[in-house]
Picture (cartoon, rainbow, N blue to C red):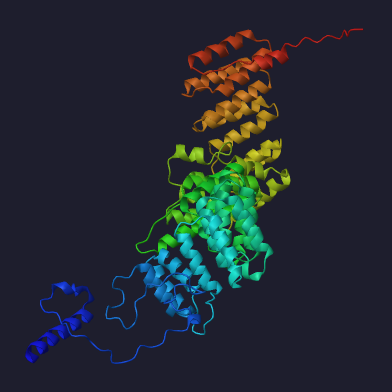
Length: 612
């Protein structure tokens, strides 16, 4: 009998040991073959129950924790966690954690996104007692974790704001992070009006809850998203005034909204203020947005915005060059030509220099197109920087000196391509013309010498524009005598223009005959100037003879030329010549159009009899 009891005891001990080591292997007692029927006597007396004031979970009606406890006794053979729900385990955990321990648990659970467990643990913890028997009190940092858990659980902004109000029950003052969580809930629900009121409340409270970078970012994005650009710009202004950092997302959205709404001056102001602050100096919109800004600035002739757009593009180009692998970005040369035109129209030398610098960087050792040089000449001429304009002309001639003669003729025509330079040379009359002439004369004797037929042609045509025939003729002669240059077709055209404007048609014809005798081929401008000279003398028949010669030379009369002749025929009552003009227009398919409005004025009947 004793041997049988000993065997049963050994089997029971082995079973309990295995059960404690591996709780999952616990089996029902009814599955055992042998059951011990001997009663076990308690070796120690039972202890007293705990003090009810400690908030022990053994008491179902505790004043601090009225929730019934289901936690097993520490003396139980059944291990902790066996048959216990998650809520019970969280409730047990709340009894043993202090404030720092709870923060550590929250930090761990945030990584696994256990937001529901965080909420439940916090609610149990604030209803529990600490080691001194006093109620647990959270600080603002701990309570913000609770607010974040509620936010991530999908709570509404109104309910989250109610939780912020409940912080007063724990003598906790909400800080900026607390309100930012509410703003995030409002941002998700697109409650811009409520967010606006909350920000105003934050501005009126103490320093602990003043808006920060995140607060301003949320309200600005909400307002921009609801097309309240004016209110959003107000908060952008507050952000910059308070010294906060403007995020890239807010800056890009602000640029997008301002460009769409044509608020270019406002956008320029924001960019300037950002550049003045070290923390916002690196802000830069996307590459496509930079191009859109540049195009819009060109359309509106906003030189400041155009300059900032180029500056942003230069940053992107620099970033691309140092990237690995490098990203090659280039600005479209046509855009740069338009930028040069904007610089000339707005008289902005800074935009001119920036445009040319970024063009050179984009081309990467390649030569710019002729249109770029002409745009630069136009900009310098508009600014009155004639010396730089002629230096650009010299560079232009050096780069394209070997191009075909027909192409060069178009590039260096003072009547078309170089017309802005001609206008700039004659802006102050003979004073400017003489100054440019003496500078060119001085440069012709330099080392290396600079001699340019195109530059001299600009002076000749400039003299013609101010009706100074003597200076024009002297400059034309000086080209060969003083500078050692051979006049080209533009030189003769400029001299014909000078004679024609003063009704010296005979002399203009002599110039034309002279250039033909020298073997210089007249161009379309030569015939056009000769036609104008005859029309000034009211000689429509001679003008038509020149047009016939032009047609025989292979040129087609333009609409403008034929309309000039037709007007003179009407005024001179030369119907025969008028019919011939119509025949020429029909032959060469030139649409003359109607002049009904002009005819209405021409056929007005004046009456001096007034009604009494």
